[in-house]
Image (cartoon, rainbow, N blue to C red; front, side, top):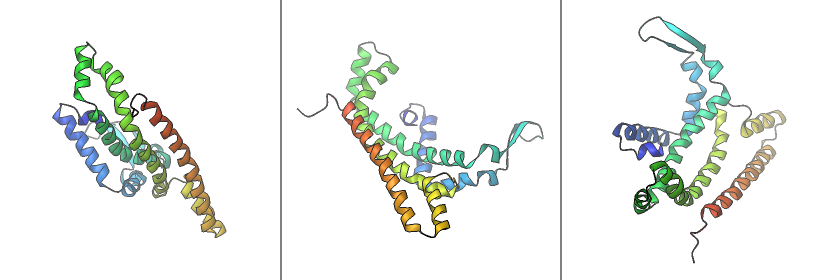
Amino acid sequence: MAMMRKSVNPVLRAVSWFFIWFFRGTPVYTQLVFWGMFAVLVPKLSMGIPFTSIEFFSIDSNVVMTSLNAAVIGLSLNEAAYLSEIVRAGLEAVDAGQVEAAQALGMGRSLTMRRVVLPQAMRIIVPPLGNETIGMLKTTSLVLAVPFTLELQFATNAVANRIYKPIPLLIVASVWYLVITSVLMVLQVMLEKHFGKGFEAK
């Protein structure tokens, strides 16, 4: 999506703009509810010739759109809209002169991207990317809208409803989220140090 936003092709730019506009502009809970109800809205997936009764194959939507698939698709599409803007901002932060210098040395576009642009852009991309990843982890508590029964918050609520003690179970869930986010924060710091080599203030 980030590369489509930077494309010279107006169609690709328009598609990426609409994707980002839609998935950033609508609540993630609403999106998850939609994907959870996909099998109800579209009971059968089929491929054939439009406006005829000819079908090459068809499959029950419940087989394809399981709770896990619905949760993964819903969160992935929502996060893709945010992450694409983070990546685009990082790429655009690299001075255009760097790209011109690389091309003057005979480096192709892909090599320039790998060797010149990305190493510099990652220093800018990693901090918000890490924050967004941690935010997404906590957003997984909303997949009970699908519903996905193996998710931590859903499982915690189920146990709490059985033993009639919601507060202790909520504390347990919070501790687990803290542990996982702490690990992600450590990884983020390590990545920031790795990609920040050579950029430290003298």
